[in-house]
Image 1 (tube, rainbow, N blue to C red):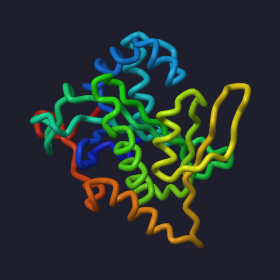
Image 2 (image 1 turned 135 degrees about the horizontal axis):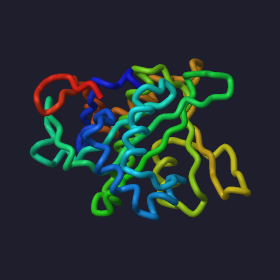
Image 3 (image 1 turned 180 degrees about the vertical axis):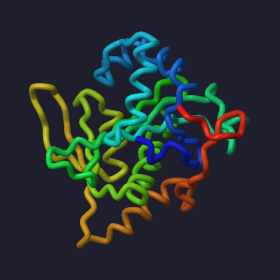
Image 4 (image 1 turned 45 degrees about the vertical axis):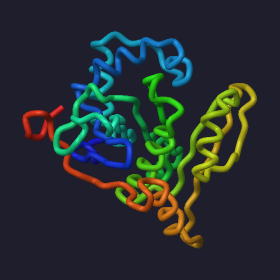
Length: 217
């Protein structure tokens, strides 16, 4: 998606940046891990295929991706963000059968083993949700999680997702976070902000490459 192509999001512990070419090589190394392949239902790709995938996602208005960077790294400050700080990614998929762009499936991956269990996944999901609500107009989020992935189920439920379906054939639980106009949806956004940086929420800043200009790919 090009909507977020020149946008970075800053939270208490993370910087979320668009998925540019310079992040592909590290992402490709991550996806050689059988555990990540299984947990994301992904097939291994060659590096060339990974670059092609990155380009297609850039141009696909039904996919929104941010790479997660560790904010504690000294290079992870605006307007320059270093790829060596990568810890994972967060994605939205707009695949509603009726074409409703207010409905999005959300996925999170913390790929670096040393960064798991620190709350970064929850922070990344909440940051993406606040951005999607305020910038993209999303009003319903849902996710599909293996019933054996207890940690992810608990994380999404802590955010406020509720279980709405179970697919026995795939052993998957579907959860949703729903905002209705007849509810105090602003309160839900405030809860997200409160969880992100103790009320600071998400700061949006321009994204630039290392040379200080806008990167084209």
